[in-house]
Length: 535
Image 1 (tube, rainbow, N blue to C red):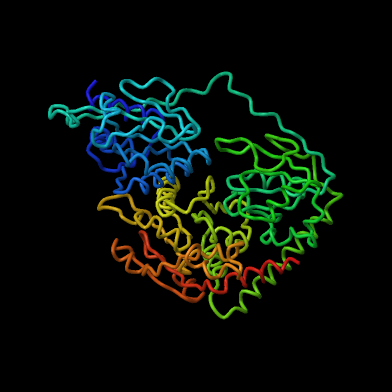
Image 2 (image 1 turned 180 degrees about the vertical axis):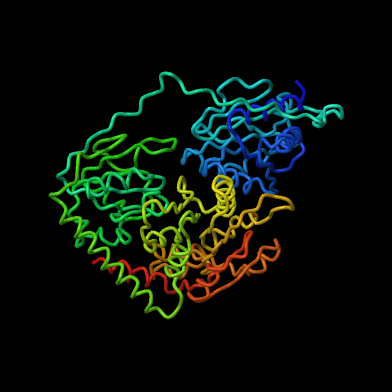
């Protein structure tokens, strides 16, 4: 089988596996795969994206796949493959069905000093199924819940013969009809009422957490990217209420859905010996939870409201409202624009049907305090890379998620929120060539010139001040406006809340960056004052 025939076979199988988006990073060895992908795009069977940087390409494909448009990312051999590793690891731990297609030299060159030859088989480790492709692909190869790696050996010649330049892939078969004997879903597990219970909804918990809390009348502690932070029982300031003197002291049982990763108070709650923990399975390559689990329930339900603890629920709600008012008053008393106020403005700017992609570190934790629960059915969506919580690839992930959501729903308001270091990590994501699919996306960069999250951790204590900036604060002094100008990305810098709100209210279309200048030198003190509000 020639390289052209093999590449066309691979692309055909991608189509049959439901791939609708292909991201290509240019190279010589993957030229046959690129030509075949271009033909599939010309036939209207996939949408084709090209990126110069494999790491950005991988995260673009990840974002497209996270939103439900299954994507494949294609790269050449050598270090190109290794640059996909961060996105692949995120896909592993978030169980995103990303397809990686890497071109490789033929097997006869392995173990030699030939150019661009390394061991690409299994390069992503034991957590990712890898298939060394030399001929036709077996059935079922791409039927995976998480990522899969096709390492394709391509030998010269790498260009199709002139007579075959007009190849088009075959029509994609209709999906197979559902089996007459589908697998039954797990039986519901009824949880008894009685113990004072809270529902903790981590990343990707989904609406089940909200429905369970509402059916029982239990407080809902939902992270911003849980998909559950809606309705009357979701609490805005829950993490400030989990201290020894707040209503959290009376918790007897926790039902956990999704991946809770943002809050140390929640981590301490899940580790308490006097608390029963009921865990619902969550996507990801590892099923075990990092905290003691009393029991597991695939589909927890309750028979009816927990009437005996109705007063306790109201205690939570009153405390949440009171702490929220004190928090807003505290932030308003600070003369300069705070990161919390900036994040709150971004959250308020997301309309019904809108999208917010949020970066890790401080922004998503600030959002956890500032995002007010929204009405059920408003379909605001918050997306984050919480599989491994990395700061890399967030610009490209946001572009991918936005493009996929627009393709599914039509154009809607889309924003991305991230810190300055996260933005710099993936500034290559702004490099889009002419004719590339481009979303309407406002990227808000909260810029405090460094790593503010570390000021709030142990290494930010005064006794480490002599080395903090060099090791953790890491000020960079980058002129974000000039960086955006290099990629012809519209940029606006604001320093006040009214300026930010006006910028968010008037998007210009396409990708634009709104930079919010904030202080870092007072962040530790501000965080201490906020944590004291729940005492």
